[in-house]
Length: 341
Ligand SMILES: Nc1ncnc2c1ncn2[C@@H]1O[C@H](COP(=O)(O)OP(=O)(O)O)[C@@H](O)[C@H]1O
Ligand SMILES: [Mg+2]
Image (cartoon, rainbow, N blue to C red; front, side, top):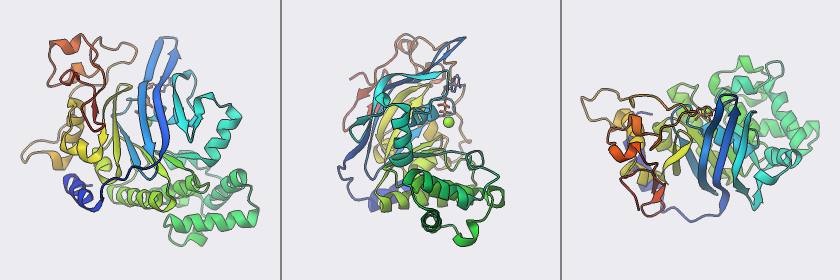
């Protein structure tokens, strides 16, 4: 993922104007907190975004920002002692927050599925991958064994697994990381979900395989007319495939815009830092950049802006006042005192 600015320019000319499409998912004011014996951790703190049909929405931020907990909240899989304490998650006119575990199970099998960073931990090592994809189809789509096998084979072909017939009988450890991730994608897509959540699906892979998997996801979402929420810490991945982007910092949204607007006109110093960390956004001679400092402890958040202690353009007011998320036009939102509506 070397030429991020070139990638964006190429997409700008090839993507015609973004059509207004049906909204598939609307998340509003989502708060997911962990109730620990040391105190309350606001892992997801008032997060809102929408996902339209046919779009790839990126959720971006450093490790610990609340990306996975956002996705797990959508899936109804937040681990204890975490809990959704506020907000709504509307998928196709249903508020998922109000569903029973049994109803949620239906949603997970049929309308929404998730793929994870490390497929080894999600695949069972003692069964062949073919059997695991078949079982998903038998369980969620009530297919017979022969049908399920045909389905698994078709899915392996769809996700570009070479020698698919032979690979059905392979065990997870016999496949490369890239192939394992393709198996996971096949499994996740076998129920034809409306929405696919992908949590750092390419982070564990090398750059070439990463690019192949991303292109595959982009192709499949067009073919299957679904929508994808893609979680990543890598702006290069965003440049490659995302249409709309939500940047999170310490549980909060700090910036939200479509991908072209974000790369042309990024407003938040945190987003700027993430972009500066990309090789192609560096000016020549500059060293590889890392945002200095660390994510604040979510148990002891600073009083003002959560990013203030690390911000290169902070002023005195930033230590005092948490800025609101404001719309600066065309759906570009930013949370920074420099843009106070
Ligand atoms: N099991 C847990 N118990 C307590 N706090 C947790 C737990 N899991 C996550 N958190 C908190 O939630 C925050 C966000 O986690 P996560 O969504 O996994 O971050 P990301 O996916 O962006 O790396 C973490 O920084 C941590 O403070
Ligand atoms: Mg994560």
